[in-house]
Length: 212
Ligand code: SF4
Ligand code: SF4
Image (cartoon, rainbow, N blue to C red):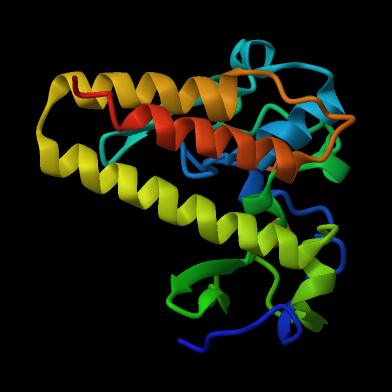
């Protein structure tokens, strides 16, 4: 697997998807949402977490941790944001994993890397595009820094839940995690990263006592 950085080129250009919406359908609960996704969704739809939970997103469990994901609609098995014309109705505010596809992310001691998911996209003759351009994400270095911190925080909590084998710890830390990073509405007029950092500090200060 070739690891890539934001300034590398990769075969990503699919002609604006050319009527295809394959990766917006039948995805189960795999399009997981991070706090920045909720911020973006809140901003573009005007709905907070509770509103989004009505039909557009749902909760799942990954290694003991409750995480929200885009919800495939029961009637169509497609994302609830997919419009009748096969286009994304929230394109400018779509989640990070939607922007990423057909790339994957890998984290190591040097930080975040990208790799191409070979044969994942339905279109074969893709053109080379710089990853930075493909992601259409402002302040990309800051975003990548956030993703790395988020990945670590999530992984540490999953590890703790697995190690402690305590229902009380699992329940309390999940409630705290959901409340602080997802349910509490973000101020979409203010900087996301400052809000996230405050919540992360609050979470780390509180989670220590979650099994007491
Ligand atoms: S599978 Fe490829 S072409 Fe089809 S919607 Fe997804 S990114 Fe676009
Ligand atoms: S948010 Fe948009 S791009 Fe992402 S799965 Fe839904 S319709 Fe597709």
